[in-house]
Image (cartoon, rainbow, N blue to C red; front, side):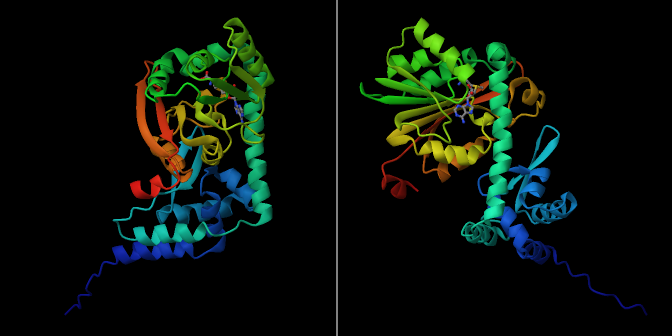
Length: 333
Ligand SMILES: C[S@@+](CC[C@H](N)C(=O)[O-])C[C@H]1O[C@@H](n2cnc3c(N)ncnc32)[C@H](O)[C@@H]1O
């Protein structure tokens, strides 16, 4: 007589065990910390943690299989970011608690320095692009999405703001300055900050041509140099050129006055990797949720969003976020 061994399924506990195991390694915890508001490719993470590519790939696989990381293809590279905890699923609360604890960790100074080096490599590529390509800027913008395609949507968001006569605006990355007339006509004072001398020269010509007397142009890196705060901060097609967009959003949100607004126009996530070469894009657009999550982490509240589908397959998101008065956010959450 053959003995039947009962088949016991441990699916759920296997899943929890994978989560616990993934968290049970200090390098993996530091990877999660480094990905708090950033995403990195395998080679970047190998550089950041000074470890071999196969070693880091193993850890990334463990974290991904446990549901702690999610991947996204950016051209030929796979980028890793944190997965969001699913609070009503098995392990969701443990996942959220783990991230909360991880965020208390301080990354070692050398890891921190190498993250800075990775960001600097990304930024240098972007600056180099605008230095060389200012002459063909408009044609390159038009290959994906030019201002005529999203101007009306951003203007509609601006006009819904009920601005008072003394309100100020800050445009980060005005490029050739095509949006500055819209801002100059609506705000008492506008400051436009661009870190590319060549692009700023184009913006200067535009301001002179249109006699925009209330616009001040500033050659500065919006993330490194001091910028004035404003009632409305505008970023049109800039975020995908920034080395660490999540961190950048946090920094730029600090420039928004209380009860003020942040308007962001961006590409939705896409897989047209030629945009990197042709238009100097560091990121292939963003998920709608990414922007909302970063804005939330920056203390902003989401408002209206407009989405614009283009004939060439790209989609644009025009997003509005506001900075609430200090204690109103607590009561709204
Ligand atoms: C794709 S262009 C967008 C121009 C314009 N806003 C538009 O919608 O046509 C991006 C602009 O952001 C600028 N930029 C990139 N990184 C920057 C930074 N860290 N600080 C200031 N400007 C930056 C670039 O020099 C460039 O002019």
